[in-house]
Each structure stands twice: as C-alpha cells, then as structure tokens.
Amino acid sequence: MSIKTALPAAELGLYSLVLSGALAYAGRGLLEASQDGAHRKAFRESVRPGWEYIGRKMDVADFEWVMWFTSFRNIIVFALSGHVLFAKLCTMVAPQLRSWMYAVYGALAVLGTMGPWYLGLLLGHCVSLYVASLLGQPWLCLGLGLASLASFKLDPLISWQSGFVTGTFDLQEVLFHGGSGFTVLRCTSFALESCAHPDRRYSLADLLKYNFYLPFFFFGPIMTFDRFHAQMSQVEPVRREGELWRIRAQGGLSVVAIVAVDIFFHFFYILTIPSDLKFANRLPESALAGLAYSNLVYDWVKAAVLFGVVNTVARLDHLDPPQPPKCITALYVFAETHFDRGINDWLCKYVYDHIGGEHSKVIPELGATVATFAITTLWLGPCDTVYLWSFLNCFGLNFELWVQKLAEWGPLAQIEASLSEQMSRRVRALFGAMNFWAIIMYNLVSLNSLEFTELVARRLLLTGFPQTTLAVLFVTYCGVQLVKERERTLALEEEQKQDKEKPE
Image 1 (cartoon, helix red, strand yellow):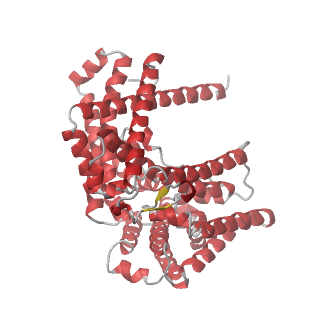
Image 2 (tube, one colour):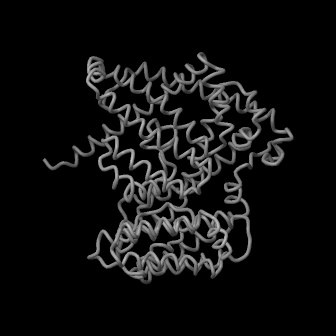
Image 3 (cartoon, helix red, strand yellow):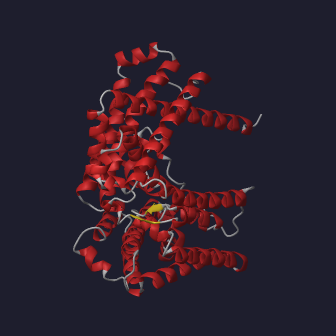
C-alpha cells in the first residue's frame, strides 16, 4: 500500500469529528474526576495549592518537572544564559577557540555544581576509554563502555561513586545519574569513532571538548562524536537563511509548552489519579483510556520541552542537535517509538543497525533487538519494571517484523493485492490502531506502574468488552488514519520540493 493513497475528504472529515468528540468526552471525564478527587486524603501529597485566587490546586506528582521550574529554575536559566553570553563573546573574539571555551565553561559548571571529586571521577572514566580507543579494538571499547555504565547503575559501585558528589541537594541524584550516564555514552562514542577512523587521530582534548559541552552534559540529548566534532570544528560557521527566526520560534514554542503544562496540571491531575487505584477504578472507561493516553503524551511533552530548551541553545552555537522525539499521538509502529532521539540514534548506530543490518531477516533482527534492549535496560537501571518494559517492547518490535513477513506470504499477499489501495490502507490502519494501544500499554508499565497498567487493560479489554473495546479501537483507528494522511501530505510536499531542486 502506497503512502500516496488518499481517502475521500468526507471520510477524513468523519474521522476528525469522531476523534475530536472522543477526546473532548474523555477530557470532560478526567476534568470531573480531578475536581472530585482534589480533596481526597490520598491526593494530599501530590496535589498542592496552585492558583489560589481561582481556587485551583495543582498536580505536583512529577518532582523533576516541579524542581526544574521552581527551585532550580533560576539556576538553570543562569547557567544556560551564561553559556550563551560566553559563547557569543568567544565567537566574536576568538572563533577558532570556541570549542575549548565551551569545554572550560562546562567543566567549571560541573565543578561548581557537583564538586571537584565528581569532576575527577568523570575525568577518570574519560581517560580510561581514551586509552582503550588507542588500541583500536571496537569490541574492547564497547565492552569497557558498558562496564563503566554498569558501574553507575549497579551496587556496590554506584553507592561508592555517588559519594564523590560534594554536598546534598534536591536534584543531586538526577544530575549524578544524568551526567555520569551521558558521559559514558559520549566517551564510548568517541572510542568507537576513533576505531572506525584511525587515520583521523582524535586526541584526549577532542574527547574532553565533546564531553563537557554544558547544554548536553546532564540531560542530553547525545550527539555521536563524529557529528559533534564535524560541526564544532567549523572555524567560521555560517547560518542558513532564516535560521535565527527558527531558533527564536523553537525557544518561544518551548516557553508556550511550559505554560501550557502548568495550566493543564491545574485542571487535570493525570499523574496523581493513577496512584489511587480505587479512585481510578471508578472512572468511566472513556476517562480511563484518556488517562492512560495522556500519561504518555505528558512524558513526550516533558522530553520535548527539555530537549527543545537545550536544542535552542545548541543551535545558537551552530550545532544541529537531535530533534525532540516523535509525538506519541503519531506513533503506531514500534520501530519509531522512542522518547530520546539522541540515545535512539546512538543505539541504532553502534548496536541495532550493526547487528540487524537491513532489519529484513527474522533471526538477525531478533539478535539486534535483544542486544539493543539489553543495553537500554542497563542504561535505565536494571530492576523488575525495566526488565518487563524491555521484554514487552523487544517483543513488539519483533512481532511487527513477523506480521510483515506473514503479510508477504503468498495467500495473504494475494488477498491484499485483490483489495483496492484505499481498502488496503484501511486494513493496515486497523492493525496500526491495535499496535498503538500495545505501545501505550507496554510503555505505561515504566512511565506509571504495573498495577495501573493491569487496571487499564482489565477495564478496556475484559470488563468493557465488546462495547468499550471496539469504541476505543475505532477512535484510535480514526486517529491513525489522520496521522497517515498527514504523512502522505508531507511525503508529497517533499517529493515536489525535490522535483523543483532537480536541474533541468
């Protein structure tokens, strides 16, 4: 089925109407539930006074979000603003030294935040992977990188190394894990790129300049070393036409998203309700489905805001960083499901694509996904929930390939060939709708809790069968068709753009 296949405008209009009505209905149920539960005893810890002048409380269950934009807001703004001003000054005075200046500023920021012993600890990991890169053995570099990552994820080494941080503060654990984990991934990328290009003779200074670039240091996203080095090595980088306008637009969009989330949490307690399973079980099925969906959408928005702010600063420094993750609303295949595009690119380049090749054969694909999710499990921190999440998503990714191979099997391929292109698109969208909910349920395990995931599955698939199950599936089907239509439009626009650029 070609992505160019269009559906009648009336049919797409019906899908839009159904989807809009369903979202509004589910949102109304969530709003009423949030109002009813605002004064419950179980909500006291995570629903705090917000806009008191209109009598609204606020969902503060996500401590990271609250810390970023309350107690640590000024520190983050100060650090990134200082980087921007420092970078601008260096670009004007000594553009050939800008990469060194970024590294010095970043190292000083880490020193001031986490202390000299923590900085020394990271330098030790950097040096060890640099030495490994000199031996030119990729397996050794990857193995040492994974061992270094494990030392920050498993006891007793993690407890010992966390003691290198000076002082105690609210975000200490988050900054420790973020800075340490991303440092290891960056150093491993450097080592693997050094092995792949022995003629380029990268130095320890190149590694330090790569690792201590402040906007990426604690929270990512991660750029592979080859991309970062190539872009940062430009002595006189030139902006494309309209680039500054796009940077300002991205920064403004991040601010709008932050304000929108703040407003949303004053009316919808989507993070607190799942913690009270008795209350959540009383929600109507439509509101419960909307609650599960909104939890994943929020996690995407959170990642998009974080990477949007960081990417705005990086683009001011003439870098082209990884884009924010694809919106969960537009995902209906596991192959495109990720919440951190930088880590996804890292895993694809050094593990997934290296083992899986073209990802068209069952056995190599199985080996590639198992290896990829094994490393992802180590990155997230091994525990029962992460094990389950990795297994489910690994299965989902492989199951897609199995279904694709089955669809190419003679009898089924003939059946699809007998269908019109529009009908083929409808059939595939139906499978996409089921896949969409598999993605939601599999990721809800880690983003919320296993108990809440079981509650949603039981209510939507068992208690609500068949009416609720089919209704949710049809609404999702409408959404998938609208996403496919958007993809079709973008593909046609890209083709037209390429045709215009072709020489006559």
